Amino acid sequence: MFVSDLNAAINAIAPFTLGAEWDNVGLLVGRYEAPCARVLLCIDLTEAVLQEAIERDVQAVVAYHPVIFKASPCITDRFPQGRVLMGLIEAGIAVISPHTALDAAPDGMTDWLAQGIGGGSTRPIHPESDHCADEAHELTVMVPRDAVDAVRTAAAAAGAGRIGDYDTCSTAAEVIGTFRGGDGTSPTVGEAGTVEQVEEYRLTLPCGAQALPGAIEAIRAAHPYEEPPIHVVSLTNHPLTDRGEGRVLTLDEPATIEVIADRLKLHLDVPSLRMVKASEDPHSVAACCPGSGGSLLHPASVAGATVFVTGEMRHHDLLEAKANGVSVLLAGHTNTERGFLPHLAARLAGMCSNMTFTVSKADTAPWCEV
Image 1 (cartoon, rainbow, N blue to C red):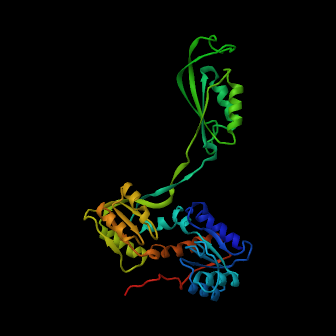
Image 2 (cartoon, helix red, strand yellow):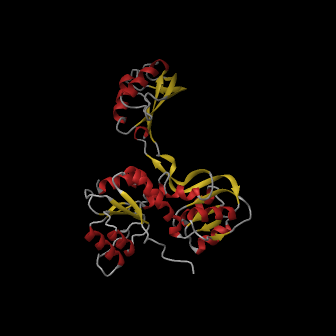
Image 3 (tube, rainbow, N blue to C red):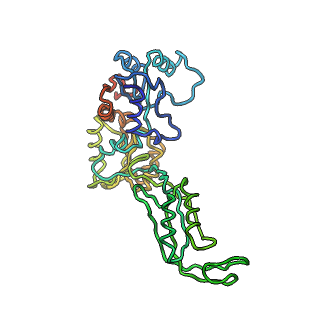
Protein backbone atom coordinates (compact mmCIF):
# COMPACT_ATOMS: atom_id res chain seq x y z
CA MET A 1 0.00 0.00 0.00
CA PHE A 2 1.01 3.59 -0.54
CA VAL A 3 0.78 6.98 1.15
CA SER A 4 -2.03 7.77 -1.29
CA ASP A 5 -4.04 4.85 0.16
CA LEU A 6 -3.60 6.22 3.68
CA ASN A 7 -4.53 9.70 2.49
CA ALA A 8 -7.68 8.34 0.84
CA ALA A 9 -8.68 6.46 4.00
CA ILE A 10 -8.31 9.59 6.14
CA ASN A 11 -10.25 11.60 3.59
CA ALA A 12 -13.04 9.00 3.75
CA ILE A 13 -13.24 9.32 7.55
CA ALA A 14 -12.81 13.10 7.63
CA PRO A 15 -13.29 14.65 4.17
CA PHE A 16 -10.68 17.35 3.76
CA THR A 17 -13.36 19.63 2.27
CA LEU A 18 -14.74 19.93 5.83
CA GLY A 19 -11.56 21.66 7.00
CA ALA A 20 -11.86 25.31 7.98
CA GLU A 21 -10.79 27.91 5.42
CA TRP A 22 -7.93 29.03 7.66
CA ASP A 23 -6.69 25.47 8.21
CA ASN A 24 -4.16 23.32 6.37
CA VAL A 25 -5.36 19.72 6.04
CA GLY A 26 -4.40 16.75 3.87
CA LEU A 27 -0.99 15.46 2.81
CA LEU A 28 1.49 18.12 3.92
CA VAL A 29 4.82 16.31 3.46
CA GLY A 30 5.77 13.34 1.30
CA ARG A 31 5.19 11.51 -1.96
CA TYR A 32 1.73 10.14 -2.73
CA GLU A 33 3.09 6.98 -4.33
CA ALA A 34 5.68 6.17 -1.65
CA PRO A 35 5.18 2.73 -0.04
CA CYS A 36 3.51 2.83 3.37
CA ALA A 37 3.30 -0.04 5.85
CA ARG A 38 3.79 1.55 9.30
CA VAL A 39 1.98 4.67 10.53
CA LEU A 40 2.33 6.71 13.72
CA LEU A 41 -0.53 8.86 15.08
CA CYS A 42 -0.04 11.98 17.22
CA ILE A 43 -1.61 15.30 18.13
CA ASP A 44 1.56 17.43 17.86
CA LEU A 45 4.49 16.40 15.67
CA THR A 46 7.31 17.62 17.89
CA GLU A 47 11.00 16.79 17.63
CA ALA A 48 10.43 14.03 20.21
CA VAL A 49 7.69 12.53 18.06
CA LEU A 50 9.91 12.78 14.98
CA GLN A 51 12.62 10.82 16.80
CA GLU A 52 10.03 8.20 17.81
CA ALA A 53 8.84 7.95 14.19
CA ILE A 54 12.40 7.38 12.97
CA GLU A 55 13.06 4.76 15.66
CA ARG A 56 9.83 2.95 14.78
CA ASP A 57 10.80 3.08 11.08
CA VAL A 58 7.38 4.40 10.05
CA GLN A 59 6.64 5.68 6.58
CA ALA A 60 3.93 8.14 7.58
CA VAL A 61 2.66 10.17 10.53
CA VAL A 62 -0.95 11.21 10.97
CA ALA A 63 -0.51 14.46 12.92
CA TYR A 64 -3.80 15.97 14.04
CA HIS A 65 -2.35 19.49 14.24
CA PRO A 66 -0.74 20.60 10.94
CA VAL A 67 3.04 20.51 11.00
CA ILE A 68 2.89 23.25 8.36
CA PHE A 69 0.41 25.90 9.38
CA LYS A 70 1.63 29.46 8.95
CA ALA A 71 3.84 30.51 6.06
CA SER A 72 7.51 30.42 6.95
CA PRO A 73 10.22 32.42 5.13
CA CYS A 74 12.74 29.61 5.56
CA ILE A 75 13.20 26.00 6.61
CA THR A 76 16.44 25.64 8.54
CA ASP A 77 17.75 23.76 11.56
CA ARG A 78 17.69 26.95 13.64
CA PHE A 79 13.96 26.62 14.36
CA PRO A 80 12.00 23.63 15.76
CA GLN A 81 9.55 23.52 12.84
CA GLY A 82 12.41 23.59 10.34
CA ARG A 83 14.24 20.79 12.14
CA VAL A 84 11.10 18.67 12.15
CA LEU A 85 10.36 19.26 8.46
CA MET A 86 13.95 18.61 7.41
CA GLY A 87 14.03 15.45 9.52
CA LEU A 88 10.80 14.18 7.98
CA ILE A 89 12.02 14.76 4.44
CA GLU A 90 15.46 13.27 5.12
CA ALA A 91 13.83 10.16 6.62
CA GLY A 92 11.26 9.89 3.83
CA ILE A 93 8.34 10.13 6.27
CA ALA A 94 5.04 11.51 4.97
CA VAL A 95 2.71 13.63 7.12
CA ILE A 96 -1.06 13.91 6.83
CA SER A 97 -3.11 16.28 8.98
CA PRO A 98 -6.91 15.97 9.36
CA HIS A 99 -7.34 18.70 12.05
CA THR A 100 -10.62 20.65 11.68
CA ALA A 101 -11.89 18.18 9.08
CA LEU A 102 -11.75 15.49 11.76
CA ASP A 103 -13.49 17.85 14.19
CA ALA A 104 -16.35 18.50 11.77
CA ALA A 105 -16.78 14.95 10.44
CA PRO A 106 -19.61 12.68 11.61
CA ASP A 107 -18.33 10.24 14.25
CA GLY A 108 -15.19 12.35 14.43
CA MET A 109 -13.37 13.98 17.30
CA THR A 110 -16.17 16.34 18.36
CA ASP A 111 -18.78 13.58 18.46
CA TRP A 112 -16.36 11.53 20.57
CA LEU A 113 -15.97 14.45 22.98
CA ALA A 114 -19.77 14.85 23.17
CA GLN A 115 -20.08 11.21 24.25
CA GLY A 116 -18.18 12.10 27.42
CA ILE A 117 -20.86 14.60 28.42
CA GLY A 118 -23.69 12.08 28.41
CA GLY A 119 -26.26 10.36 26.23
CA GLY A 120 -28.53 12.33 23.96
CA SER A 121 -28.99 13.69 20.46
CA THR A 122 -26.41 15.95 18.85
CA ARG A 123 -26.29 18.52 16.09
CA PRO A 124 -23.53 20.85 14.87
CA ILE A 125 -23.27 24.36 16.27
CA HIS A 126 -22.28 25.56 12.78
CA PRO A 127 -23.57 22.92 10.32
CA GLU A 128 -21.77 22.23 7.09
CA SER A 129 -23.88 22.59 3.98
CA ASP A 130 -24.07 20.44 0.90
CA HIS A 131 -24.56 21.58 -2.67
CA CYS A 132 -27.02 19.15 -4.21
CA ALA A 133 -26.10 19.39 -7.88
CA ASP A 134 -29.54 18.35 -9.15
CA GLU A 135 -31.33 20.78 -6.83
CA ALA A 136 -29.34 23.98 -7.36
CA HIS A 137 -32.35 25.79 -8.82
CA GLU A 138 -36.10 25.88 -8.55
CA LEU A 139 -37.65 25.94 -12.02
CA THR A 140 -41.25 27.21 -12.13
CA VAL A 141 -43.61 27.62 -15.07
CA MET A 142 -47.31 28.54 -15.29
CA VAL A 143 -49.15 25.94 -17.39
CA PRO A 144 -52.79 25.49 -18.51
CA ARG A 145 -54.49 22.56 -16.84
CA ASP A 146 -54.56 20.35 -19.94
CA ALA A 147 -50.81 20.86 -20.65
CA VAL A 148 -49.38 20.10 -17.20
CA ASP A 149 -48.51 16.46 -17.89
CA ALA A 150 -46.87 17.22 -21.24
CA VAL A 151 -44.73 20.05 -19.85
CA ARG A 152 -43.72 18.05 -16.75
CA THR A 153 -42.73 15.05 -18.89
CA ALA A 154 -40.68 17.21 -21.25
CA ALA A 155 -38.84 18.97 -18.43
CA ALA A 156 -38.11 15.66 -16.70
CA ALA A 157 -36.79 14.13 -19.92
CA ALA A 158 -34.37 17.08 -20.13
CA GLY A 159 -33.02 16.41 -16.63
CA ALA A 160 -35.19 18.57 -14.36
CA GLY A 161 -37.15 17.08 -11.46
CA ARG A 162 -34.37 14.91 -9.98
CA ILE A 163 -34.01 14.43 -6.21
CA GLY A 164 -31.47 11.75 -5.33
CA ASP A 165 -32.56 8.50 -7.02
CA TYR A 166 -36.01 9.88 -7.87
CA ASP A 167 -36.99 11.62 -11.09
CA THR A 168 -40.06 13.48 -12.43
CA CYS A 169 -40.34 15.22 -9.04
CA SER A 170 -42.58 18.27 -9.12
CA THR A 171 -45.37 20.16 -7.39
CA ALA A 172 -48.40 21.70 -9.10
CA ALA A 173 -50.70 24.27 -7.48
CA GLU A 174 -53.80 25.77 -9.06
CA VAL A 175 -53.59 29.52 -9.68
CA ILE A 176 -55.31 32.23 -11.74
CA GLY A 177 -53.13 33.87 -14.35
CA THR A 178 -53.70 37.10 -16.27
CA PHE A 179 -52.07 38.48 -19.40
CA ARG A 180 -52.66 40.79 -22.36
CA GLY A 181 -51.08 40.13 -25.70
CA GLY A 182 -49.51 42.99 -27.58
CA ASP A 183 -49.78 43.84 -31.28
CA GLY A 184 -48.79 40.91 -33.48
CA THR A 185 -49.30 38.23 -30.78
CA SER A 186 -51.51 35.15 -31.14
CA PRO A 187 -52.58 34.16 -27.63
CA THR A 188 -53.53 30.54 -27.05
CA VAL A 189 -56.38 31.81 -24.88
CA GLY A 190 -58.43 34.89 -25.78
CA GLU A 191 -57.46 37.74 -28.09
CA ALA A 192 -54.58 40.17 -28.41
CA GLY A 193 -55.14 43.52 -26.76
CA THR A 194 -57.53 42.14 -24.15
CA VAL A 195 -56.71 41.31 -20.54
CA GLU A 196 -57.42 37.61 -20.21
CA GLN A 197 -57.86 35.51 -17.08
CA VAL A 198 -57.14 31.80 -17.19
CA GLU A 199 -56.99 28.88 -14.77
CA GLU A 200 -53.39 27.64 -14.69
CA TYR A 201 -51.12 25.42 -12.63
CA ARG A 202 -47.91 26.66 -11.05
CA LEU A 203 -45.58 23.75 -11.92
CA THR A 204 -42.31 23.66 -9.98
CA LEU A 205 -39.38 21.27 -10.42
CA PRO A 206 -35.87 21.10 -8.89
CA CYS A 207 -33.20 21.51 -11.53
CA GLY A 208 -29.41 21.36 -11.64
CA ALA A 209 -27.29 24.00 -13.33
CA GLN A 210 -26.18 21.69 -16.14
CA ALA A 211 -29.73 20.57 -16.95
CA LEU A 212 -31.23 24.06 -16.72
CA PRO A 213 -30.76 25.29 -20.33
CA GLY A 214 -32.11 22.05 -21.82
CA ALA A 215 -35.04 21.97 -19.40
CA ILE A 216 -36.06 25.51 -20.27
CA GLU A 217 -35.84 24.69 -23.98
CA ALA A 218 -37.93 21.55 -23.47
CA ILE A 219 -40.57 23.48 -21.51
CA ARG A 220 -40.84 26.08 -24.28
CA ALA A 221 -41.22 23.35 -26.90
CA ALA A 222 -43.95 21.51 -24.97
CA HIS A 223 -45.82 24.58 -23.70
CA PRO A 224 -48.89 25.82 -25.64
CA TYR A 225 -48.17 29.52 -24.94
CA GLU A 226 -46.14 31.74 -27.25
CA GLU A 227 -44.30 33.13 -24.21
CA PRO A 228 -44.38 30.63 -21.35
CA PRO A 229 -43.92 32.37 -17.96
CA ILE A 230 -40.77 30.64 -16.65
CA HIS A 231 -39.06 31.58 -13.39
CA VAL A 232 -35.67 30.34 -12.18
CA VAL A 233 -34.69 30.74 -8.52
CA SER A 234 -31.22 29.79 -7.23
CA LEU A 235 -31.36 27.81 -3.98
CA THR A 236 -28.96 27.86 -1.06
CA ASN A 237 -27.06 24.75 -0.02
CA HIS A 238 -28.71 22.22 2.27
CA PRO A 239 -27.51 22.36 5.91
CA LEU A 240 -26.28 18.98 7.14
CA THR A 241 -27.25 17.78 10.60
CA ASP A 242 -24.33 15.41 11.22
CA ARG A 243 -21.24 17.47 10.39
CA GLY A 244 -19.84 20.89 11.07
CA GLU A 245 -18.16 22.94 13.81
CA GLY A 246 -18.86 22.02 17.42
CA ARG A 247 -21.79 20.04 18.79
CA VAL A 248 -24.93 20.89 20.73
CA LEU A 249 -26.08 17.94 22.83
CA THR A 250 -29.63 17.58 24.13
CA LEU A 251 -29.18 15.27 27.11
CA ASP A 252 -31.48 12.31 27.65
CA GLU A 253 -31.62 13.32 31.31
CA PRO A 254 -30.65 16.69 32.85
CA ALA A 255 -27.38 16.60 34.83
CA THR A 256 -25.56 18.96 37.17
CA ILE A 257 -22.22 20.34 36.14
CA GLU A 258 -20.55 18.19 38.80
CA VAL A 259 -22.01 15.02 37.26
CA ILE A 260 -20.95 16.12 33.77
CA ALA A 261 -17.45 16.90 35.09
CA ASP A 262 -17.13 13.43 36.59
CA ARG A 263 -18.21 11.84 33.31
CA LEU A 264 -15.67 13.88 31.37
CA LYS A 265 -12.79 13.07 33.70
CA LEU A 266 -13.48 9.38 33.16
CA HIS A 267 -13.95 9.78 29.40
CA LEU A 268 -10.82 11.89 28.91
CA ASP A 269 -8.77 10.06 31.55
CA VAL A 270 -7.78 13.27 33.34
CA PRO A 271 -7.57 13.84 37.10
CA SER A 272 -9.16 17.29 37.11
CA LEU A 273 -10.95 19.96 35.12
CA ARG A 274 -11.30 23.71 35.46
CA MET A 275 -14.88 24.81 36.10
CA VAL A 276 -16.77 28.08 35.68
CA LYS A 277 -20.08 27.56 37.44
CA ALA A 278 -22.80 29.96 36.35
CA SER A 279 -25.72 28.32 38.20
CA GLU A 280 -26.75 25.39 40.38
CA ASP A 281 -29.45 24.26 37.94
CA PRO A 282 -29.17 20.91 36.12
CA HIS A 283 -28.29 21.16 32.45
CA SER A 284 -30.49 19.80 29.69
CA VAL A 285 -28.50 21.19 26.73
CA ALA A 286 -24.70 21.15 26.53
CA ALA A 287 -22.21 22.11 23.83
CA CYS A 288 -18.61 21.16 23.10
CA CYS A 289 -15.63 21.79 20.86
CA PRO A 290 -12.21 20.10 21.01
CA GLY A 291 -9.14 22.25 21.58
CA SER A 292 -9.97 25.94 21.90
CA GLY A 293 -13.68 26.62 21.46
CA GLY A 294 -14.18 30.20 22.62
CA SER A 295 -15.41 31.35 19.20
CA LEU A 296 -18.34 28.95 19.46
CA LEU A 297 -19.45 30.04 22.93
CA HIS A 298 -22.00 32.62 21.77
CA PRO A 299 -23.65 30.50 19.03
CA ALA A 300 -23.78 27.58 21.46
CA SER A 301 -25.59 29.79 23.97
CA VAL A 302 -28.00 30.96 21.27
CA ALA A 303 -28.67 27.28 20.49
CA GLY A 304 -29.77 26.79 24.10
CA ALA A 305 -26.62 25.35 25.71
CA THR A 306 -26.14 26.21 29.38
CA VAL A 307 -22.83 24.36 29.76
CA PHE A 308 -19.89 24.45 27.36
CA VAL A 309 -17.05 21.91 27.24
CA THR A 310 -13.72 22.62 25.55
CA GLY A 311 -9.98 22.49 26.16
CA GLU A 312 -9.09 26.11 26.81
CA MET A 313 -10.71 29.54 26.65
CA ARG A 314 -9.61 33.16 27.07
CA HIS A 315 -10.13 34.81 30.45
CA HIS A 316 -12.58 37.39 29.11
CA ASP A 317 -14.59 34.71 27.29
CA LEU A 318 -14.98 32.92 30.62
CA LEU A 319 -16.19 36.12 32.29
CA GLU A 320 -18.70 36.63 29.48
CA ALA A 321 -19.90 33.03 29.71
CA LYS A 322 -20.55 33.31 33.44
CA ALA A 323 -22.31 36.66 33.04
CA ASN A 324 -24.58 35.11 30.41
CA GLY A 325 -25.45 32.10 32.56
CA VAL A 326 -23.31 29.55 30.70
CA SER A 327 -21.15 27.23 32.80
CA VAL A 328 -17.83 26.09 31.32
CA LEU A 329 -15.64 23.01 31.78
CA LEU A 330 -12.01 23.18 30.58
CA ALA A 331 -9.91 20.01 30.28
CA GLY A 332 -6.77 21.36 28.63
CA HIS A 333 -6.35 21.77 24.87
CA THR A 334 -4.91 18.41 23.86
CA ASN A 335 -6.75 16.52 26.60
CA THR A 336 -9.93 17.03 24.56
CA GLU A 337 -8.19 15.55 21.50
CA ARG A 338 -5.61 12.89 22.36
CA GLY A 339 -8.08 10.28 23.63
CA PHE A 340 -9.62 10.01 20.18
CA LEU A 341 -6.40 8.81 18.55
CA PRO A 342 -6.84 5.10 19.47
CA HIS A 343 -10.32 5.18 17.92
CA LEU A 344 -8.92 6.77 14.76
CA ALA A 345 -6.13 4.17 14.63
CA ALA A 346 -8.65 1.33 14.87
CA ARG A 347 -10.80 2.77 12.08
CA LEU A 348 -7.80 3.26 9.81
CA ALA A 349 -6.59 -0.27 10.52
CA GLY A 350 -9.96 -1.60 9.42
CA MET A 351 -9.68 0.29 6.13
CA CYS A 352 -5.96 -0.34 5.47
CA SER A 353 -5.41 -3.99 6.38
CA ASN A 354 -1.80 -4.04 5.16
CA MET A 355 -0.75 -1.13 7.40
CA THR A 356 -0.03 -1.08 11.12
CA PHE A 357 -1.04 1.92 13.22
CA THR A 358 0.54 3.01 16.50
CA VAL A 359 -0.36 5.93 18.75
CA SER A 360 2.70 7.97 19.74
CA LYS A 361 4.02 7.69 23.28
CA ALA A 362 6.27 10.73 22.91
CA ASP A 363 3.33 13.00 22.11
CA THR A 364 2.30 14.63 25.39
CA ALA A 365 0.77 17.90 26.55
CA PRO A 366 3.35 20.72 26.86
CA TRP A 367 2.27 21.36 30.46
CA CYS A 368 1.82 19.20 33.56
CA GLU A 369 0.16 19.40 36.97
CA VAL A 370 2.48 20.56 39.78
